[in-house]
Image 1: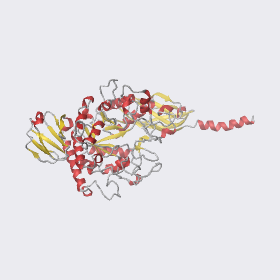
Image 2: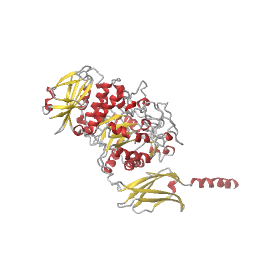
Image 3: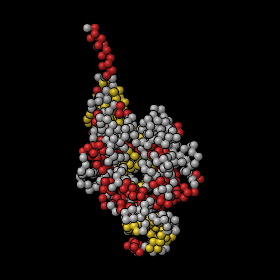
Image 4: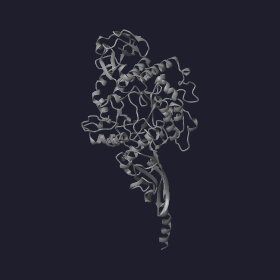
Length: 615
């Protein structure tokens, strides 16, 4: 009997402890009235929160359904926001045994006027890609933050360097002067990992800006400042994986929240398996369910609660910050049916919104599969308006370096563009010469500035939306170490201790200033060249190392000549009469000179000639 009483005495405090309730977080942290979809699902987390009775007393904001999982620390609340619901604070109350165990003041905001239909990024823009940690350190006080596992160390190419949102804000005038019209920021959300987290792709909190980069409020202010400069904001988002230190990894809502394996299993990275009509189940499963890396748990988007969470998170950031577009990382890796629903939900709320997906494959047919409204044999529609043109990037890295041949050299550009019939909307592809994952263009062009200029001239005049990588305008290179840390070097002058400041003309070498002026000239011209934005593309098969193409519409035309030879060529233009017969002269866009005779054009070695044609 005494032993029984002793056991009871020991169990009573344990039982009381087991029933302790603690509300820790609600996500999304707030929402808006006036969405087309009147429902939002709240993920509620806290100790034993599923044992509570939940109530909300707010006109028009009601609980439709409560979901529980096997984990008592989670609740998922389906909330309905009725038409006409007024903005305000709704009290969500959690009771345990008739006692209030927790309250959450849920803020309902009114959507900003004009927030739904917006002019997203398109072919009239030039996107400037920058990595917040490596662009500029505008606030040195947040380099190291309490609770963050990795401190700043600029001596480590793979470490954090201290760049932040304030640094970007400080240099908006530089970007405006250069002529870019849209900024793509690599992820800035919290990445609280022990190491190698500066890149932002190991998110540990989807609703929080990393404190070493700034705050949510600072990001919203940055977006406002960018908009006031007449530029647009593109946010990098990741739905395939999170960081291994994400708060939910210590206490998953359910075992199927992530794709589990008996031991660490890496993806095969074969994106083509998704559209392969002959693919084996083993290969397709390994691609979609395998982990991107050991520190990047692979999310199971088919979990219905996680699916809603991820869709709502994207919508939340669009509305919160007034985003003009999204770049989605590793787009083919998540389950494609969920990604289709994700894209559709965003476009329903924001008609005309543009999303570009990273579909890193070498064949146009593989990439085209992922663009919205593609005529896929399996009838899959991604609802993804734009994709990166990786096949054209691959051709661009080779075109100016190879000997001219039947299927080599500059012909590679022609051949890839000739396959545009597979794309539903080739004008909405994002074209680029480099980015944060590949060696810088100057490196792939063997440190030949002439080739870099040709590559950028091509990117800025061919069909699609051009994207340039930060520092290309000042001849930044990867250097001897070809690792990611070197690809993502700090922009010189972005740190108070920098001895050189490339943000100013005084800090640039003559060669760097020449390159800056070259890029600025092209970007400034391009802003007002509607024919390059929306005009048709007409090109001619390259001959003798010279590739000629036109951008044209009913009123205007631009002629582009790429000379891939090591000597100046005098181009007889009789072959191009179907366009040139309508024009008698033009302006050399790069050098500013007038061209009065279009019949014979002198094109210097390894250079681009861009002519604004006149009738």
